[in-house]
Length: 194
Image 1 (cartoon, rainbow, N blue to C red):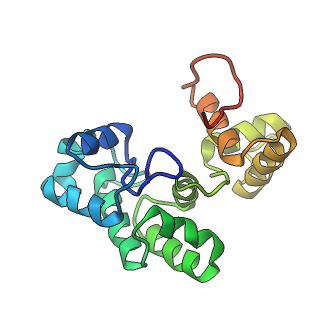
Image 2: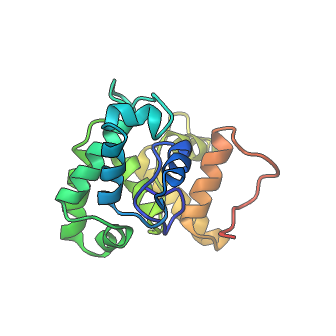
């Protein structure tokens, strides 16, 4: 949920939200789910926080719900599953029962799917890829497939390419995503952690 992997649990529905939360005195790289819930509630609740805290009326994918509502509901769901910090979230990657419980809680929130769960883990510092449509389109083009490849094929391709290149899967995923979304500013190269 933080913008930087390894960061805290306040984080993006959008980048401006992190700036707004920071300006309000919070630390989005260290604060907990409880801190996020409290910040949203101090802003007047999730609907009001859309504008006052996160600066966006964007909707959660596939829904008419505000992203701020989905973020609030996801924070409540994670708290209910015992995940309160980024460390707790990272721990789910090595505990199948805990991951199942936390993932089920987060995916119960409308507008948050498997790719968003994987991305949340990546932002918490768990290496991997989130085979969303941007990643799947890239792999489709790279392998010359006629139809968009599925999530599992895209995941395997990105993980395999990262291993071949000797880079973290997270960095290759992020580089591909930026390239595919036309947000790339500069020469195409693998991002570094620096």
